[in-house]
Image 1 (cartoon, one colour):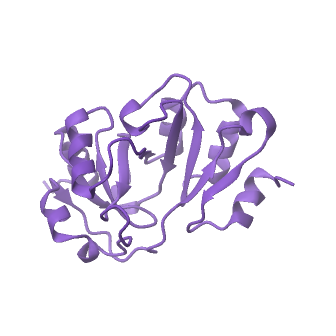
Image 2 (tube, rainbow, N blue to C red):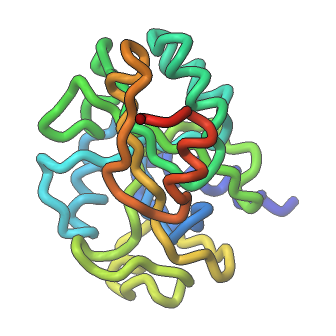
Length: 202
């Protein structure tokens, strides 16, 4: 019986290894967000400073909302409007969940929800970062991921050619209180599309 890519992805993540995988924007690195050794391995492969935050990725909106029950109604509505899609949302983290992903700021969590056909059905949350050396160019294809990075991963999944533009990072930390939001990094989703879902900041 052939093991699906989704099942293989989950097996390797649960085994404490790092996976190179296709997201909906660029190729990424993923690991168990609760496994300190796996997170250290991911950061070492990327050459990322350990105090820098990463995002936690979910493969369905329901999984994200279930994992973060303390998020307020307005912020939950924003997640529902913007995801799955090419955004990373910075949300309040009062319960300090997924601390290994939060870097120096445990009260903020970066959340990604993606729709990746080759990984359809994945139930795990993963800590993820782009599969390129810190400061380097994003990988649009698996071949563009550095050979050393692929060799250091327990699994590399080829999802074909991706858009090659990273996610747009949207700060929602005050959205629940006053409806304010801001774009921290412009990426694949334009600010006009974000405004169309969240309302104007004017």
